[in-house]
Amino acid sequence: MLLEVENLHVGYGNVEALHGINLSVRQGEIVTILGANGAGKTTALHAISGLLRPAQGEIRFESRPIHQIPAHQRVEMGIAQAPEGRRIFGTLTVRENLNLGAFTRTDQAKVAKTLQWIHELFPVLAQRREQLAGTLSGGEQQMLAIGRALMANPRILLLDEPSLGLAPLLVKAIFQILWEINEAGVTIVLVEQNARAALKLAHRGYVMEVGRIVLEDRADALLINPEVRNAYLGGGG
Image: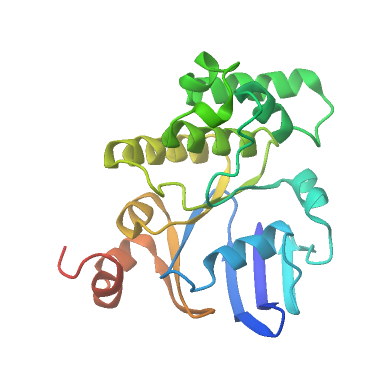
């Protein structure tokens, strides 16, 4: 198993946001985490990436406990995150943003190869490499956020709401690129409000409600699950 989360409790001050969740991700999978706002999806990603320290429980990467390891060391191990809201550096150029994603890497030849791959995935980033990131469209900024995370050469990519605020055609394009990234060997954990698109892309899924995982299944099974359809897929659609 590439990633395992066991009995994870995470809180903000005295308020517990995750109540002992368990999840696992195999090498090569796309696993999606679904749930309403406030369910704890982003908190789970932040705990995996090291931005939040769990109060209880264990996170293992390739069977190695990592929940006490700082975030930057988890990046070096192969865990990268493209955060909700993109969080690009608007006053830096596209090129500078991408270079920041490779801050843990020292082999410049391999970094250049990764950059070439990202330019193939997102040609607009190559075209606008010297443009200030803050002047990009929302979709282009999302591409940059994903590209910046890929510059770390991750084994597993954590994506938080990549379709947020994007037009349907652009969402379709982003999800096609996520499939290509996965086909290239990158495991993906996807937090996504667009449940239908996420389940069509993913191999497996988890459903969270108020800090707990209430359902786990293959993605195709979740797509036809009546509870999931009613809660996240618009009923009979």
